[in-house]
Length: 527
Image (spheres, rainbow, N blue to C red):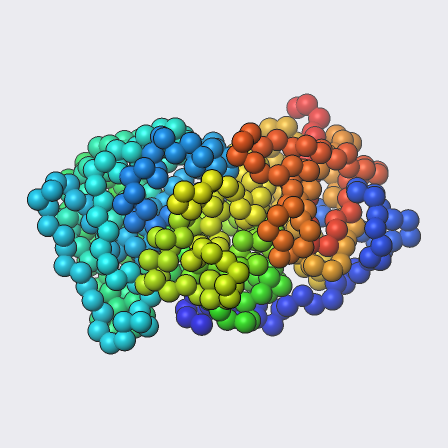
């Protein structure tokens, strides 16, 4: 386990304890409370706003910057990919970075020489970084601009920090800023610099630390700012070291002023995929450290008038685990994780994915996910990708996208403080909207159902409806539905089954099957 696992230590022993409110397992009618059942769990909306409104651009995707070496991928002609982006959000954020960004170079003319390829010393097979360079052409950036026009999305553009120079970065940034225009949110300089000194990375020597990083990073930022008036930046885009984020906000922000607009970091819940301890059960057990660390980072960001965005992450690092990252378990995990971050004031989340060729290259051509699959998978990696977009194959949305779609319903809403007193593996999130309230509930226990009572706010009308997120099993890769409908790029997704929720007295009552989720809509009286 590498340092991406450190956040899991607090939760390693909290695996699926028996539910405090165990219910009979026999089937019940959707939305109904079984007579004589255990007292339902009560979800209370406390009324206090937990954060500012969730940004409309909260939902995001992260891709390897090397994906731009195929200019036709992010282009206005890639209709399947455009349709997939539209399904997830009408105005999300695309982040381009990843390990490969440290080996990308901008070939602004045929005569531009390639940078020197850094080859780590020691056992090359133990190194998890790319072992080749990736040339990005101006045409790729031009096409990216057309793709962003077609999707309505914005972009975080990564530049090579590990194997480049301030001068090269400035040339690339100037062209990107000119072509991408208002679609460009900010530049990201480097990817996971807190790992540079590690032996399996080797981008910098042992002993290289945050002071060295800050000094070098500022040289790049100033060179870009000189070439791009009004350039905006985010960082440090660390892999695991949240203390680097708070130091970045405190030490770098004062030197850049308004040019720095965001602090950024990554989070992978599990990994690596070939560790037998990595399971869907443990993934869904949650991680108490997420709240603690996110609260600290958001506070540090706000103290310097910045926002925090989780710019790369997913269910399992090093490409994801088959049967978990590409299955229904990821649907539940993503919805729960994204809404937890939204409730803590995070400005957005970019889940990593893309073409498995580039994801594999970004890992030094290692294929731990495929090794776990033992020949049952033809793809080399990228099991966690939200959008399956393999070469010469139809584009399709993966199970994790269902969780993202639930979280997207909260865009523009104001998250509320919510309480649910239980030892069960159930989480709940609520928000105030223009029409009433949203309540998302995730039952992450794979064997025990639960009855829930949502206490109606004082201005709520006695009417409620729900969408259900359901799948055949945690490891199911097909048969998943949200509101009775599957995600199909042949048509815009729309709920097929909107369930009427029983309202009894001052609460809305709903039964939640094991390993499922529900999004409840509470209407409010006109103001």
